[in-house]
Image 1 (cartoon, rainbow, N blue to C red):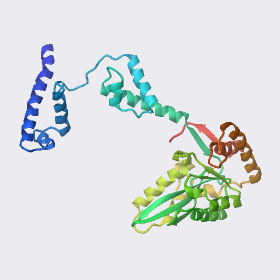
Image 2 (image 1 turned 60 degrees about the vertical axis):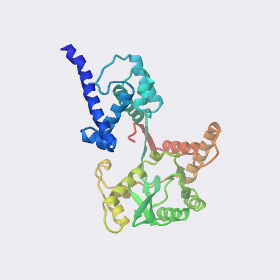
Image 3 (image 1 turned 135 degrees about the vertical axis):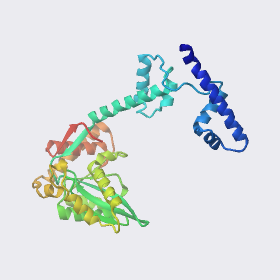
Image 4 (image 1 turned 135 degrees about the horizontal axis):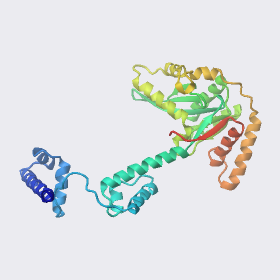
Length: 339
């Protein structure tokens, strides 16, 4: 019985060689490799693999199923270390060629398990930022709208504690003047927050926007470059906006969308609506001048160690704003993120 098992790969290889010769005969008559392989009932990639094996002098086909090879624990550890060092960007084939004796199937399993462990560790060490009081921090972002070939943008402002959209406007030009007008109307209608969280769009850091923030004594908070997760809630809200717009028909009714989203009960809010929690927010009694001076002092001390150019977009300013909010119990952080 063992002799039959040993001869099975040889017989399988001979049958495949015969089918490969038939493919070559069909190709000689003008058929492509894809059609020739399809004519005998196999895929083009299988025929290509057989041709490569035959040119290399190897068996054309092998017995199906995993071929277990003894592999040391050190080799597996080295493979996992390579996956960690490359942040999971190394492929299974590259991993197989880097570690001697490692099969592609085992390399794929090691990569999958290592990436799963790395993701669990990243989430466990990630920091979750929670704004404790509505009205303290507000986010602002733009969402591109494409309807009937017209390039338009929806400028949206929302609270950072509860998912309440305070202001929105559709504009054709996404420039600093449009951003300044939306922010001015938002501050006058819903009150000015202590901190406004903005991304690094060019139209968010112009003279018109800075004048509005200075007039209402609001501190700008720009996130780090190429890090959209920093803006968290406003990015997740844009997903809701896109899903809503994708299922809507006819004209774009941004007012109806925002009213419906603000009035929707949510399990994360204890089955309250964002509008109810916003209307029940406590009165904000914070000395804006003292708050700004404390942020400036912290940022100045941090810049002495970080050696960065003073700016509202540098790391020192972000850390100073965050720590000042934490000290005043307006912000808290927890270990264990979800994004």
